[in-house]
View 1 (tube, protein in one colour):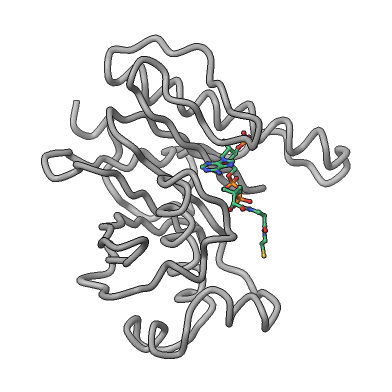
View 2 (tube, protein in one colour):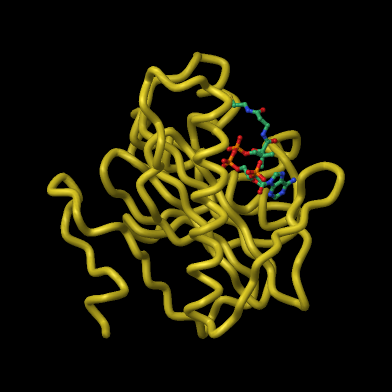
Length: 200
Ligand SMILES: CC(C)(COP(=O)(O)OP(=O)(O)OC[C@H]1O[C@@H](n2cnc3c(N)ncnc32)[C@H](O)[C@@H]1OP(=O)(O)O)[C@@H](O)C(=O)NCCC(=O)NCCS
């Protein structure tokens, strides 16, 4: 997880997005380095879907505030979203009333939580938002995880919330994986959750 660089309001929007995309790729490289890998190129197919490198899957996400990237030896999807108001139709698109009830009812916090979770599962599958209707929330075991049903099976989604952003990550064959969210440290607004360095 990284603070998005070069997002000053007076910069042209395409340049801000370019800065986000570059930083997300650097976050992916950082994830690869921690696995002892030197991934330099992140190829995408003609639709923009990430192409694995020698069996290593990767996923990235970027907003104006936060960018993130992850590399893993199995399909993986990551999505970061800032908690903010959306149009009414997007709220309905994201989840049904029953799904919001599983999270304790509708709120912008819960909207962002379920939206980022669903996007992470759809990204893992290489689908875009067009498959959103096939993705259903079935359980929320605790504040850091969600279980979704998509295309005939269930998907476990790990979640972290910092600085008004939800990040969701879903990986296949993740049972033995140790999750370590690495939020940057030098921002006093970031609430205390351990970072990678805390374990060194
Ligand atoms: C394509 C999609 C994965 C983009 O997600 P997003 O939330 O808009 O953007 P994010 O920053 O989280 O992710 C973008 C990254 O996902 C990756 N990506 C793109 N298509 C992908 C796919 N089919 N599967 C997995 N990952 C994909 C790319 O690496 C992309 O980064 P890049 O453009 O710098 O290469 C998907 O959510 C989608 O279909 N979006 C369409 C936009 C839309 O309809 N938005 C409506 C909002 S109300």
